[in-house]
Image 1 (cartoon, helix red, strand yellow):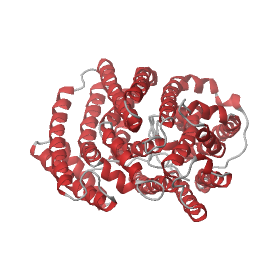
Image 2 (cartoon, rainbow, N blue to C red; image 1 turned 30 degrees about the vertical axis):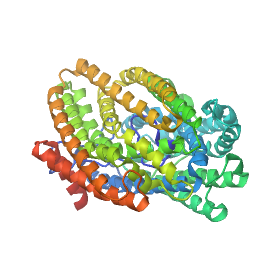
Image 3 (cartoon, one colour; image 1 turned 60 degrees about the vertical axis):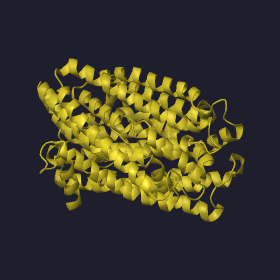
Image 4 (cartoon, rainbow, N blue to C red; image 1 turned 45 degrees about the horizontal axis):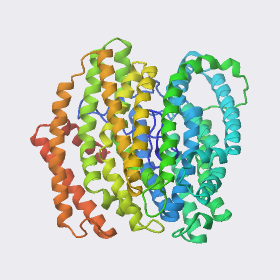
Length: 587
């Protein structure tokens, strides 16, 4: 996903706009065990087979955990360097162009890959005499042809596509720069699709290492590109759009494309390792595309609605780019921080829950589905609460520490911190809404997910327009983030109401009681964090060193006070969260 905005429900951003998210598995039942034994490829359990890694599920989980952590760290360094290299204004244009491949890829393939094609590959892997080899070859051939043709058409239509993202306030020079970036960045669509298809083939055959580690190649190439740009041209600090010569555009955009090429190429040796021979097999009729289309229809509705919201938010923020306003780049960096918290905690819980809920739903044990869902909500909110508090209390120090430098000025970082403070209120609703979505997937409710998403996206888009009119340009990105938070909350409320009708009682009373205790612990931790920030040097406008001090000291105090208060209030999920951290440190 470009820029880490709105992907299908099975994916999340880790700071690398092109990479998929690997789950860090945790236990949701017994603090002394891991969830690895319950892990499976949805909707069926697919053990590693000969030719794959051949390791245990626990071993694969460890590989995924390490790969995800390293990818997140390097991916975040990548995004920091892009901001420091290009600055806010040029970085906004670059980020606007970088959203496009992810948006279009999601419409072409991303939305149906995990919900339709992977389960289809799993079934053919089990049912076909050749282990699904011929079917997979035909599917890859069809994907290469269709993705190639679609990418060529999209690149040709780049000026019209980028015009959709331009508002009435967008300057002609800025719009032309976005288009210039887009010509070189849009071919990423092909390589993103190719990488995703190869990763699916490897996962189905029990190989998890390469798909987790290949995105790191992408990040390293882009990091190197930023370094070359700085050496050759210096940073883009103070640059206007017209200062970006064809050579400068070609270097930064071409390096971004090369990163995705490296990611796709890095997966090819793994195909040979699992014994998969990729031969050209053009036979679209043999793929049963009618069945795929029927299964994918509702997921495409879901994805299309989300991508419409992306176009709207980018259009609004492109109109306020410049003049030290937080715009597309700042909004995206904050979203990546939000998704990082969700990816480490929320995705971990969901990955552990989905196989259990799927099995229980298939056997009609809806009480168990309800129990797993409510347990997941309690654990997720308990684990995410101190992160949300840290974002709210330390938003500006975090942004200054992470992003200030090079072409990304202190004013740009300060504006980003304001957006992060608002994003604190989106962290928990985001993960709870995703948990509910996974519950629907366990119940084979793709249609329900799509129908729920329609009013949610309509509220989100309405919020974008209303808040853009109400707020000053300097607060536009914060307003877009607030609209996201409200839409996540609405999604969770509607989903829980529908799930209650679908599977019966959800034990929401116990959930509410637990959430109240978590809220009290979070409030106490927030007060302690604010006091520490007030006492430390730097105050409300810290420099980079004092900001780092505030982050370290304030973050430590928030975490300790939160854990202590939650323990005093007997929040039982705390022991599981602490156990999870201890196991990861021990590993």
